[in-house]
Length: 323
Image (cartoon, rainbow, N blue to C red; front, side, top):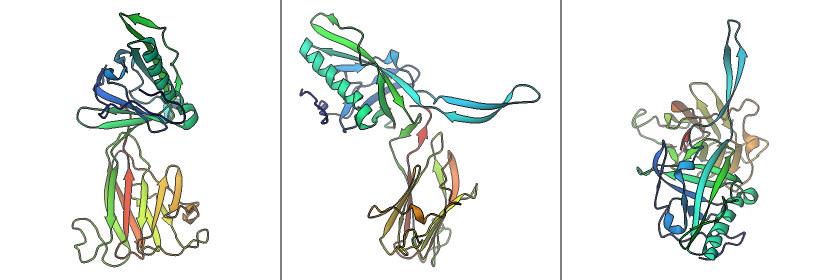
């Protein structure tokens, strides 16, 4: 097994995706994988690799922590004003072993590098896979714990345990499967079958989007021309935003057939297909780049100047309180 030297990560070749599994108290059986910032994939529940998870010490996989802001109530007690989700910490004990001292040290160093490089190269990804095929992930940054508990030996084996604390700036778990909603220009179709469509030039779709997660998501939109003005509205709140490709800050003019622009809602980012910044084309200051709450939400996509090839693709990954 080759040593890892930054900036290249060479995790072990397991011949499988994750493999193994661990029974986590209160959460059941799961396969856990860590992906480092360089793209190296490290199964954490496959004992044959030379390390495995000590499930009894795992914590931080439940509901996100919250800070509550309240106001005194004149009749006693208080009333909640705001609940602010806080960064979470995951505690993850790893047991590392080797048939001799050199093999143990090699494995220990590889794992330490894979986790601590998040302090320099950006967050890694922690993914929990269930037997039903569902997977949830969260971005993690190493905080502490790779100092070991003191080398121990049993028979000829050398081993030690690292009790990792992994810091998560976003406390929510994200579904690894992306939800996609596609709507496109259509002609010669019944207005209500299979969904509202356009017969001439404007309303691309009034539809219901379902967020199966526990908390709000901030979707990404891809618009494909032709289109001269783009309006997205959330019907329950009336929040909307408009993108004008002819705005003076852009000066492009209407999107022609096949031209594409992508809108991210958090953080706000608008990019034309060549990467140029189109955020100035939004209808500031009234633009409200809205989120999708849990459950079903009625939304409307409007494309002025729509024609054959016009389309809207909405994508998001549901977010959850627990792993």
